[in-house]
Structure formats: C-alpha cells, structure tokens
Amino acid sequence: MLETIFSAFLCIVSAFIFYLSTQFNMAFIGDSGLGPDFFPKIIAIILFILSAMLFIGSIRNKDKKSIYNPNMKYTFMVIFTFAVYVFLIDRIGYLISTIIFAFVVITILKSKSKILNIIFAVIFPVALYLLFTYAFKVSLPTGLFI
Image (cartoon, rainbow, N blue to C red):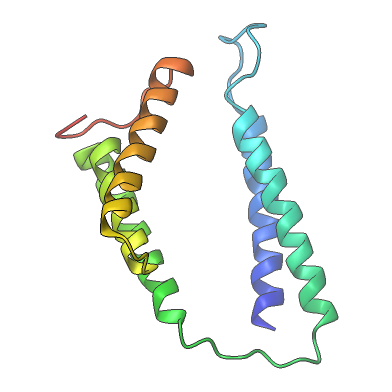
C-alpha cells in the first residue's frame, strides 16, 4: 500500500517538475540549441515513467505482503546524508561538499576498497565540475572553497 501511494506521489511530483520547467524564461536564450528547460524536462519524464512502472507493479502485486528489509537503516542514512549535503552545498561549495557526500555514501554502502572510494569520490565530482563549468558554461555553487 505504501509503495502505491509513494509511486503515485512521485508521478505527481514529476508532473509538477515538468510544469515548472516549462515556465522558465527562455527569452534570453534565442536559437542557441538546448535551453535551461531541457534537463529538468528529461529528468521529470524519466521520473514519471519509472514511477508509473512502480505504481503498476505495486497494483499487480497487491496480494503479496511487503517484506521488511533489515537494511532500511542504510537507506535512511543516505537520505540524511543527502539532506546534510543539500544544506552544505551553498556554504562550502559544490566541489568539497560533493566529494564529502560521495565518500560518505560509498562508505555507507560498504564498498570494500577505501582507495577506490577516495578515487571515485574525488574524480567524479571534479569531472562533473569541469564539465559543467567549461563545457556547459554553468556555474556551480561556490562557498568557502571552489
């Protein structure tokens, strides 16, 4: 039952995100290609499709009981970490907060190699930072550090 309600909620959220992205001011863009509404619309469409699939699956499996997952504490730990990340991103900047967030989430998910955790937690955010800053010309939040 909870899965059905949550998936319906996600469908509504995705429709709302899509609607909000259509309200972006595009007058200053011109015909230079993809506008600022492209990425939010794609994410909203993907979220809607996946939520609809989850909704349909939960309706079909209505007679089956949910099995309690003892690893739910990890899910809540990641959600809490994400909330802290959202709080910190404007204060200490995108790069440092994303490196910390990635490392903590990888550690929560119990990856075996600490060296690979550190490498992934540093390389991936730096690559995204360079991609958005230089290729897409999008400024990411800056704080105390980059």
